Image (tube, rainbow, N blue to C red; front, side):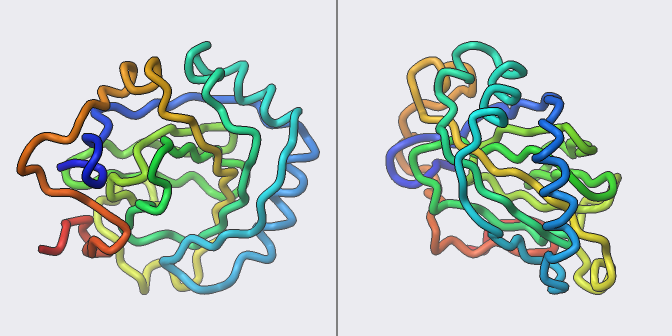
Length: 196
C-alpha cells in the first residue's frame, strides 16, 4: 500500500515515553472530563503552541526526529476509537502523546502491533496506516463496549517528512500499482481492513 500517490507507507513506528509538564497534565485531566460521550470517534479539542511541551517531547526523541517536530499541538479525546486513518495529514508523520485516562492500546491494522499507552507514552506513526484506540489486548473495535468508557486524552503532534525521518521510518516512493490510501478510502471500523 502507499500513502496517497506519492509515497509508500512507513514501515516502522516509534514508541517512547516523555514526562509531560504538570500544566499539560492538569489541562489533559480537565479536557478528559469534557470529552463528548460519543464512543468510537476521536474528537479534536483545540490547537495551540507550547514551548515547554515541545522541549519535553523533543528531549525524548532521537535528534533527527526532534528536529522535524512542528511547533503546533492539538488535543484529542476519545472513548475508544474504531479503526480509521488520518489521511488528511498528507506530508507528515503523526504523533500521539497519552496524557490522561486508563491504559489503552494503539492498535494498527492489518496485523500490526498493539502498543500499550499509559500516561507519558507516545507513539509516532504514519497517519495513513489504519489504527484504533482499544482496551489492552483487544484487536477488534466493538462500539457497545465503549459506550460508557472513560475518556482517553492524547496530545497530537506532527513530524515533517525530512530525509532523515523518511530514512528512519522506511518511507520511499510509492510502488507502481500499489493500493493508494487517501482521505476517501473506507476502513472497516471493527477490523481495520481496507474496504475495496
